[in-house]
Image (cartoon, rainbow, N blue to C red; front, side):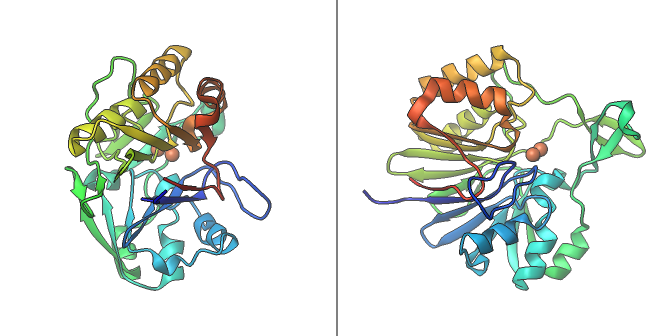
Length: 282
Ligand SMILES: [Fe+2]
Ligand SMILES: [Fe+2]
């Protein structure tokens, strides 16, 4: 069977075997045709360290795609550019640069914690980043598309109300317009690769169908942001994935254990933990 796309997970909360390091964050290397795309970069230097452990030469990367401007997906940019010492295109939404915060319990000291991109644009450009800022879908090849903004459509998915942007000294709810995913068209259907799916896993999949004109969903991989979801949202998400007849569901990062367990029980062999070290070919 021909392989259309290879995914290698370089940063995740979980590690699959000895020698890898885990951290709260995400990064997936997506190889498809001539393109080797890094979707997100983890928070620290985990991508660089796990790539060495996996025998992956990161200088093969042709471009970086950022799913949204949280530091667990963008913090690794500096280490990466310092290590690679080369110029690379970076695709992300302009609102990824917003000053993003998460509300935490008062007992943790300051209630608002900065969780935005921990670098300046100038620093990253100096190190080699060349930014393309997109709101609309961006086709990288005729097989690979970055979704752009994901419309909120399902009645059971909502945006985390714990997240804020600071505008002129005031905290406003962050609607995370910068949330996007990477989609690969394969001979078996779409492979949808999620960062955090802040606009909802099902909304993201439906948007992928819309922009590609392809209804068949072959695989869904990455962060689903179900870690704060109630059982109703988890059940409805499972029903939708079943309706889409997904052949593989590989969860990472902000999926959380209860949702992962529910998905595993339902999808059995079709489920996998997309942890650091996992390599999937579709
Ligand atoms: Fe996030
Ligand atoms: Fe995240």
